[in-house]
Amino acid sequence: MGRVAAPFGVKGWVKLQPFSEDPGALMDFESWRIGRGEQQRHYTVEAVQDHGNALVAKLEGVDDRDAAYALRGQEISVAREALPPPEENAFYWSDLVGLTVVNLQGVELGKVDSLMETGAHDVLVVKGRRVTLIPFVAAIVGEVDLTRGTIVADWGEDW
Image 1 (cartoon, rainbow, N blue to C red):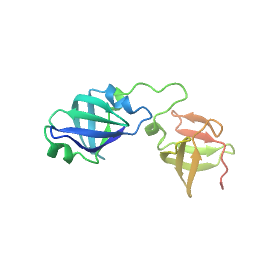
Image 2: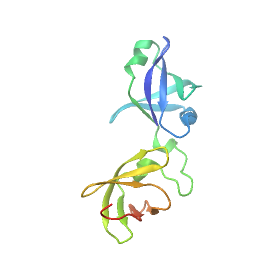
Image 3: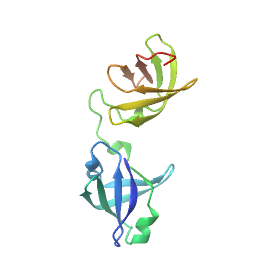
Image 4: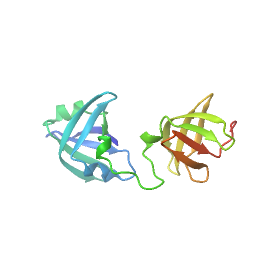
């Protein structure tokens, strides 16, 4: 959902760079997981404030600039069960990663490896015989079936 950008002040506050469309989304959670990969630690959020396009926060146990500096560059996430269910025809990116993408002719293009935000729309990064970038828009992506683990896209095999 974001990353720790830098220490903020001398009392343990950190400046955050949110990754979500709504920078204030992190403000809705009482605790965060901070770390890299499997190395994550839970922190209780004592206070969080809007700071332009960023946020600043005070985390329990992070009481000085050195402790805040040690968190610099680490990713911020929240427990999946703490997230609200997505709206209809909306998906969490993490739910799409690993799904098999097939085109209208039934040809498997590969699996979703990641997504990119381009400003205009999100893009599926599909890895199969080659890497394919597919715009994640309704005109191209016709069906996402999380139960079957598939995405049907109007996309050519050689595009």
